[in-house]
Length: 171
Image (cartoon, rainbow, N blue to C red):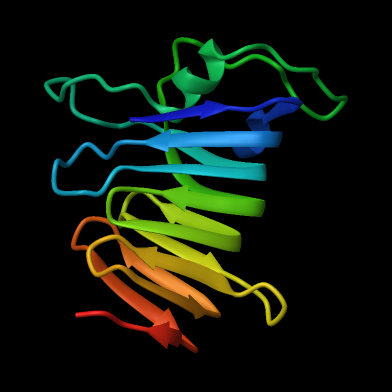
């Protein structure tokens, strides 16, 4: 399940199955698999790619990205965007990118980054920073605080990989 909230605008581009939300965007994600870490994302601009949901009819229904977007407050439509989502077509989140003052909160980690991408198929979250604004990671399990140019976190397996890591690890 993935739910979205935003303050300014939401544009849906039906031809490319993409939604762009801006200003004070919040994403609350709870994976279908119990083993996956749930998380809460905040940032300034979100781009979500959607795909048709081809799940089996026997599979329990879940709130998808499109239904969450469709039930949230309406937004202004632009000349290239459609402000409606066809209710008979069930969609799911394929990939998302959130940029600008990005923060991830979970029971496992807190992460501050310039940009974060998330692939719900692989349950991998990737945070990237810059030299001036590196990724900052607070690991709640170890109490460690570190910085890196990139963090890759598999929320299913809880594997974490840091690139250009600096910081202290407590054991």
